[in-house]
Image (cartoon, rainbow, N blue to C red; front, top):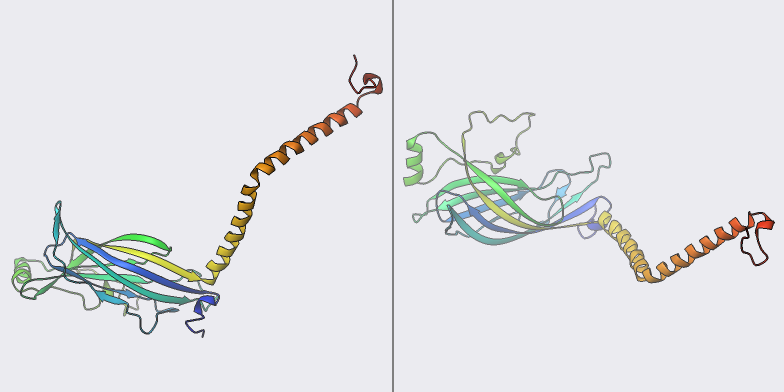
Length: 262
């Protein structure tokens, strides 16, 4: 298997670089929010450097009123790198893409935390800058007792496996039933991602575009000369047609000077 230094030059290899930012979170019940997030790589043909951290926790942030909502501005930066190697040529050319999971929690003055919401989003498959709004939800219990316990004691129902937000990693069946699992819609998190992709295929297509662009530049530089040549060429074609038409006429209709006579 190719080393990581040579991975980008191997046909079928793709390297993904993401510079991200947890921008803000809004619409949650309690104050002093912080976010735990991590990136899950598909198990097939994806890898990351040994030193790479695919998870993070933001600082605790107090909210500010913005209209009817309370918004916490984090501006928390993070970055990670991952690699995909397409080894099986018979498999689908479009690989599974990494997923970003996030968990919003609140912390009170007694250091009690509450789960405010869970969410997930598939990372953008296209390079460039992206702003993603991730809606969240949380498990809930029915009844006043559960809400009083959440308010006075802290703590609440939470997921043991965060991947249960989408499809649990331990799930092996064909159908996943969540019947009876009660949830409540909460707020949303805003991420800003700057994605870069590196692949040999991109390099080849880029060089092709560069060659085409150089040809276009040369054509554009000679546009004035081209227009003059076009006019001269059109004039020559018109003159040649006139000569051919004159030669096809009977000789008694053409004077020695070359003009037609009645």
